Image (tube, rainbow, N blue to C red):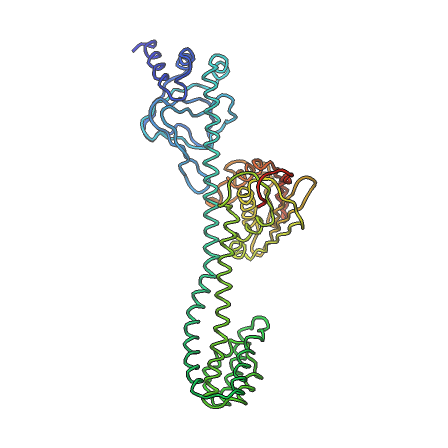
Length: 475
């Protein structure tokens, strides 16, 4: 096949190209004349991460896979097939490949060197326009993929933290339910004995007094193990002196009943009825306490669910609206509490009273706070401190996330918002968190800045205050 026939065949193949095929044939002939055909076999690497991007590739047949390594190993990002373009594009600022491109099957490409781009722009107006649209589509695809990946990472952290937070109250409910069954059985057995004891009104009043004393008298603080042992021994000695079952010492010591109440009951009720009265009182008091523990645990679970719902704003449309930041900041801290607790890190949230709502997307703002606070928790050592402050500054609200960690290395400060850049260890960071934060801040018409010295790193996010007439109900 002579060169003219080969060029004609190549132009005919370009006419069938999905992205460029509708361009004038003269422009496709220009591409064919200034490019060269390349063939890749399965597994061939078209471009490695870190290599310079110096040519346009028009994919004629086959399939390319795009891989990225964000610190946790090589991951498939997206793919390109026949009818797509890749590599350098007119007006693109991409100079170094952040990804690896590999042929997944035999692939034919038309390669046009970047040195021809000036002529391409001048001679091929229609092709240039289509390539610019392809560049915008590529940027959107990359952004969408990166945002999705970062959201999945955030979701994984959220799920892990939430599972840990829910496990504690769930375990408390299970433990309390088991003890409730045992104590109710004790109470039933004691009640049957009391029912056959024919207690007079004065004795019943003494019984009620003992029961109420253990409910109304608060336990002062949390007793130490030594104090618990001493209290149980004291009650056991009292029971022995009254010839009663000393096994009652343990359940009675779990209540707040006082020695004075025991004496008052013993002065009115005697014998087996006294032992049954003590057993019934102890069981009743413990049941009341366990029921309160179940209620507290259930409220904790519902509170966590509400915090997650508020954090994700999964029941609201993604439209800009007035957003009250206090709730979002509190919800974000709530879903990250287990991580803070695991490192014994104190997290302080201070929101200016009567802080006006900002204008933005509630779910995106919470993702900003989630990433910044999560990064701050990573930055501090055990027993560190993270502060979150929000206050008005003119027509804006400034949110500051401050940590007392080691600070950002000087040579990294100018790059922390770059895609795929991370100062974390391999496998611990995607390098996308702060890039996503920057994009979300810009999408919410805000600004972000950072100052960092050892012992004090501060991220500042400035957001516009909602104006009268901004739609929606404040979130």
